Length: 260
Image 1 (cartoon, rainbow, N blue to C red):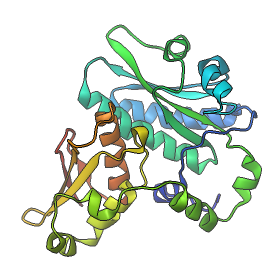
Image 2 (tube, helix red, strand yellow; image 1 turned 90 degrees about the vertical axis):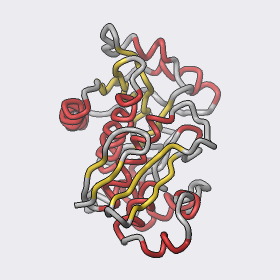
Image 3 (tube, rainbow, N blue to C red; image 1 turned 135 degrees about the vertical axis):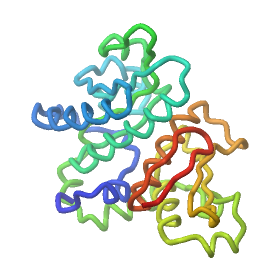
Image 4 (tube, rainbow, N blue to C red; image 1 turned 60 degrees about the vertical axis):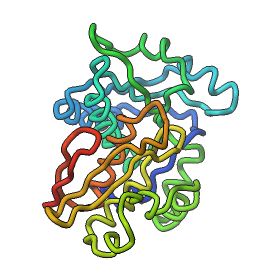
């Protein structure tokens, strides 16, 4: 797995990890993650923070068996009542998640499976900001054998670990002829977005391609309620951008992607 260092490789092997080994995240790994976090915080205008060794934050989830040995997390902090900031938070925090995946760490986005008040005690939440969500992070259970597993095996685990929506469902706004006419980069982007995490695994983002100006668009599906729509939109946009190979998104529900 160490030979695969591209973000698309991380997308292809990332799964939600709920069981962890108790081994701590070492200082060198933490420094590497903090370097990534500092860079994306500058771009995003939010405050992602790595918090280590706080098992009390997950005491209930660990006791119930929903999580196992969860103790570390990414705290995702940003302006209150700001959907665009929440979207940016999803986009850029998932970028940190993928960097962690390439380092052999496991992650799992959490909203309700933690003590948010306890989590807020161990990170910086300035006046006017709030703690949006968190990402559990740590060494997956039996991580040494996982690190030794072939990349192809990890890809297969990702492919089969959950039921997800089809390409046609993700592109519901398009008819069959439009799908056939769409360029390869669009399909690659959607297929990468199909592997993105989302609240309650509801995958609430729809993609479409406009041949007239060679752009893609992403919008929240009004038929799906997650409570984390802007965050899920940002995560899905990042996956799409990586899958498409190059290009940039406009923020917002219905924002356009320009491929370059």
